[in-house]
Length: 625
Ligand SMILES: Cc1ncc(C[n+]2csc(CCOP(=O)(O)OP(=O)(O)O)c2C)c(N)n1
Ligand SMILES: [Mg+2]
Image (cartoon, rainbow, N blue to C red; front, side):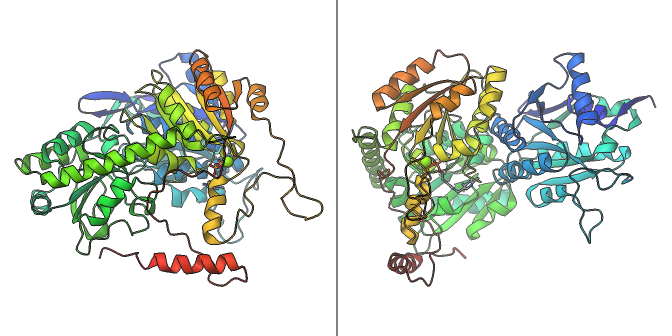
């Protein structure tokens, strides 16, 4: 057996450069590159190896410098999302804080079912110099390190303490990255001394390797049960989730619903499955849904979930589906999701399953009155969107008008990126999506700070599309520093910063729980009151962005915004437009609810009132056992 002598770091990098994924006959590079921030935990191992790879040329594993380890993981997750989970990035960190910074990113990736490969450094395997800088000394568990925090948020976790362990650790990691039912954060911790240790590796470890992503078919008997359920329904509704997009099943979905007339409502991850103006599209569903989808959901006798994990926002905290004998059919690649709500489980790939369903439903259609009803409801919602886009609110515009301008200035294939605040809900309701990859709102973890980093990853995945990052002032202040990475890499992003002087979404939420606007404004502490109700904080976001090398403008009106966005199109690197909005103008009401518990006892009147409304709303909540 011929061998090659390399360090663990060099072997890992050489291995990762050779991995490919394949679906439908097309191959992709599985690990596009490696984001990294170095410290003593990885500089001599993975760091040294990446440097050597750079010397070998572009075919090796390209290195990208991040500003914050959490943001690197967000960029990797966004990249994987745009590439339908067939390609991703590795992220290397030092030990200690660099590693734990990645834990939030890991949770986001796992919850959104997005593959990311995390390579945190870990403490010395030999322990001779313990405790090393940044080492946790756990009193009881001698083998614990801070990296154990990755376990619950990873779909795969391993710790390499000897070189011999590396091949199995990496091969197992690739398998999970490429498994659509099991993917998420894949964490391989590499002890810092072991990373630099040499070993004689079999050459075969570094041969090019293709990981086939197959399209499992649902069981024939389950398919027959699903077909019977659909054929006997009168008011069926499809709820399309992210799985439809990842499986590249949007054409199959469109063919099925054009043939049968079943209307389609979309989750946050599934928005874009159908173009907003498709005759079978009824838009967003759930707590941030359209009145059309929510009205149909209320009376649906059969709900067909495809590639959705039924989050509380989708089910309006289990109040959306009110028909007493409502049944579910769930098509999902992941068995636990397919089994939810006592549904008929179609465990399989979305595209393959939709093709089979279409064949089994041949000749069957919904009634003409039902088509007429949902067409009318969708038309009414569209008129609400049109009004919300053109409120002409003064002196400050409403957020819905900002969404309207960005939607109109952007091209049909362009991508809107968002994650937290009041914007995701408003975008879910109001954004007119024209392309399956045009809507990128991270709402599994709804992580403030994802926006800019996610925009970076999205643009790296799709350089031929413009990427519009919609971000609140709160999220921007939490983590905008990947703008520097965008400047460094010459990556074009257009950031629309909506400034409403604080956490407007939580402000609105606080009103519903009876804690009016507490802790949600960006104001100085007032000396007299001792509270945070002094002057508005003097934040200058334009100056802030400019100081990072970003081209930036302040828009005072929606017309200014439109003009700035047009100018931004010809800017080479990242651009930012700040616009102040009125936080008190909500998007059109979805006629829906979200379960956020209210204090059961309080001496505040507003809270007692809120608790009463909460208890009344909970009466509508049900399980689908
Ligand atoms: C990391 C993180 N911390 C806290 C939250 C809870 N949270 C959700 S939205 C929000 C405020 C967001 O403020 P901003 O970005 O300005 O958007 P706005 O609410 O004003 O629309 C907070 C604190 C979160 N989602 N993520
Ligand atoms: Mg805000």
